Length: 297
Image 1: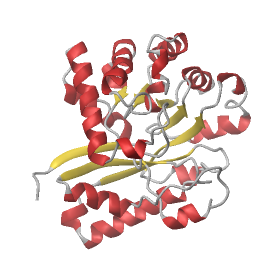
Image 2: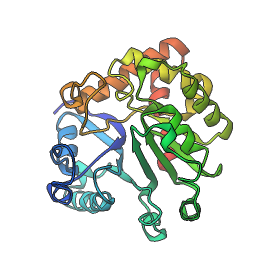
Image 3: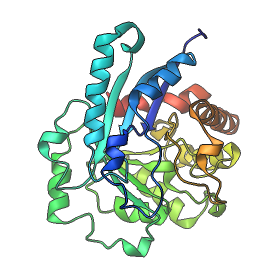
Image 4: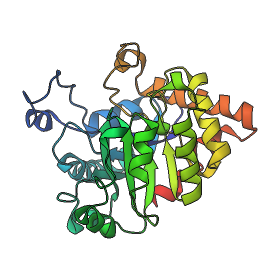
């Protein structure tokens, strides 16, 4: 057995073959392979990695987040059967941010820490000023508890910004994939600079990695993280994540699954942190974990 290394995974997806059967034939692309919690944990633990905090995030291809709630039960059963192997794992979840789905009852689950809006490659002009500020959305925001957050994923910085400006200012927000999946535009893109400025003004907006969807080159991703640290603050960056099981392709069409596995993703975020540390003189460990306690406590 290898020496144990503790790790946090602030963004991962767990789902079974039964979950995928619910959407079989309804997608314009082939389904990913199942990615169950038990297999993920065993892979890490057998590699000498001890996962301490895991966030199971709503998977966009599924119509709801019942797989997130099922993972809570699955871990309970694992810990009851083998507390020595699985007992140190803390599992939290981020459910679908749909006003009809994210009910008071579902948000009241003690392991639910937030809800996720998924917009993928939606262009900014497709987001109207009323899309996320209707009466139904306002009621949803009011149901979020003080420790919970709204999680926003869009590839375009300006799309993220247009959604953020509709969210009440007392709601904590996490912007996915560092706020942009377009490394070719650089961290000085006007929309990106405006997004960071709005985040700084609000004071309760975090930016989350792992960052490989921004760029699979750690040095390029580090430019965006450095910009976040300098504009918003080191306490607002969450890097340690895998986004497993690495579905989709990068901007050149290469499948992420060919570039990353769990170990390679952790190596990637370590490399990003070291690049940023050299630029900012902030310790890499602080960059990796400084903010996570604010989001999962």
